[in-house]
Length: 194
Image 1 (tube, rainbow, N blue to C red):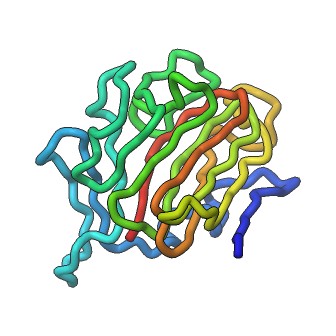
Image 2: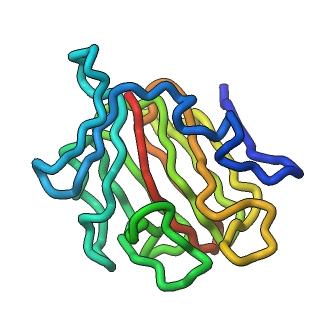
């Protein structure tokens, strides 16, 4: 069974809307993971001694134009066809900081594979085209999809703002793909939860 969520509306969603507020995801234990081993910022609920349930990648330690593959392997994720950039094009602003990920050398495609299954993946996305975020199980069977229905470049007439939050949720996600057919896109604040 395929679960599909499509973000469609005639109203421009804002992060003040309840369904887009990150705090509504009830993420209590989170680690901000750095590409450099040993650097992390913990955001942990002090009332529990459990292992963090979510990991948010800190992209700021990456060098501009660095190929991103195994830098976050110790945190449980490996990227394919990914490049760190500091966008000079104002149509692709970063959500926070300066560094974002983009699909390269193949335009319009980026994949993340998890060493252990996760249940939720999200990122802030800015795209020149319709973009599909798909989640797959161990056997590459589609589990869930979310769609950014159209381009959301900054300083454009798009109904969607840049850095729109996309997420997928399903049991036992082993990989996700971001695909903007023949388009360009950037990702910021890549996060996954167990």
